[in-house]
Each structure stands twice: as C-alpha cells, then as structure tokens.
Image (cartoon, rainbow, N blue to C red):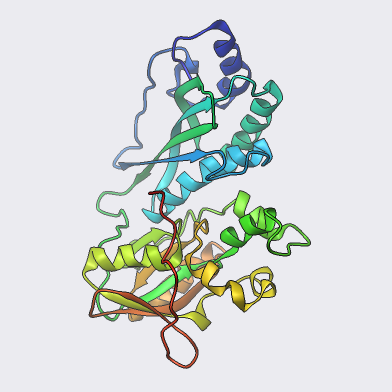
Length: 318
C-alpha cells in the first residue's frame, strides 16, 4: 500500500487501508514493513490471488470479496496448523472502481481481522484495465517441527474432512440461477468460506491440506505425496441439507467442484478419539469418508461398492 503513485492513491490508502494496519506496518508510510515473530515460533507464509470472474463474481458484495480474499489464505494457514499473525495485500482495480466499493471491501477485511486476530502489514495498489485482481500473502506462526504437511499419509490411515463438502461449488451455481437456494445459504458458503483455524492437529493427523480445487483432486495430492492410493465412500461424504436438497444429480459436482476450504486429513485409526476431541473443542464437525491404501489412484465408490466415474477430478486454472 506504500508504492509511489499519484496523490489519489495515497488518499485511498489513508482512508481505507491505514485503519487496517497493525504493528510493524509503520502506518503504511515506508517501503516495507517490520515483523518480529513470537519467541520460539516458526513463521508460515502462504499466498493466494483472486480474479474477478474467476474466483468471485463481479457483482459480489465488496465486503464479502475482502473477507473471502483473507479467508482463503487463512484456510492455508489452518491446513498447516498455524496461527494467523499478519498479511500483505496487492489490489489491482479498474480506474472506475468507486470509493464506496473500497470502503466496503476494507470493512469486510476489518471484520475478519478482528475475528481472526490478524492485521495488515502493507502491500501495493495499482490500476488495471481489468479484470480486478487481488492478491494476499498471509503470515502465521507455528511451534518448531509442528507444522502439518501434505506428505505423511500411510497405508491404513483414514480419510477425514471437516464441515460439509460441495457447498462452495453449488453456491456458485446458485448465484448463476442453476441450483435452488431459497435462503441464500449456498451462496453465502461460496462467498464466505470458513477457515478451520485452531484445531489442535499436531500429533493427531499424518497429513493435511485444505480442499480448494475439489475433494477428489486434492485427495490425489495427498496420495501422490505419500505414494499411495485412496478410496472414498460417496455415501459417507458429508453434505449440507441445502446440498442434499439440490439432488443426487449434483453429487459429482460436490465431489469435484472445489471452493470448500475444508480440511482434508489422513488420520491413523488409533487417533480417532484425539481427532474428535480436537474438533469438539472448536465446535467443528469432522467425518470419516474413506481410507488410504496401496496403489496410485483415488477411487470413489457408490453404496454397492462400484466405482463412480467422474468427468474430471477437480478444478484446474490451466
């Protein structure tokens, strides 16, 4: 937010982003920020970008765009078992973006900063002919040797997920008028994912990541990291009442659509009680949906044990 530019840029920063700045930001007046990690902790970094028309709709409320930008990065911190600390942000907006849009965008960030205990350090603002492009780098901290990793699943580990699967993908379809959503619940899940921060998973799970590009595809990432296969029982995959109401025709979308930002975990069977206790302490639902085994593929089975054929495993940008 402190890149040299026309006076209007600095006024925008002062009005909307300086109130978000935390310790080390130097009031967004210098070329870089200062950050001192908590004593005895390791820093964790993650970055995600969002592009209008790809990751959010151009007419989405600006406050939800700001909140989603922060939350998808917080989900990555949650997948590493990290505690949020600070973030850097880059905003590339069309020149005709209104001051009211920036005010609402900053308000969404401010609400989530207060909720999740994180503050702005700095970043950059630029103009673009479009589309709007937003990037955020989140910084967290974790105890030494306590970060959760994608690599580590073992044959016999169970596959577990937090929350419900498929709401984000169905929420986008609801906003496009393709899925009924009378109370807006699915749309809200697409616009405002829930990062699963605070779960005490170190020593409980063998591997962990968040589900952003589709359950089947992301489980494939855990499998490749461990040199394993996995089986999902479709009937065990937790779906919300709204997702179930959409009908069974949408099951493949729930399994592959992405935008869930739930945690996907490999858990030894003798750690089930510890996982349930950690989830209960945070009021978080967790569900066993399958198992890792020997091989190199992810299979989804129906209630009769037959493999469900999917057109694609998940989302890809390329």
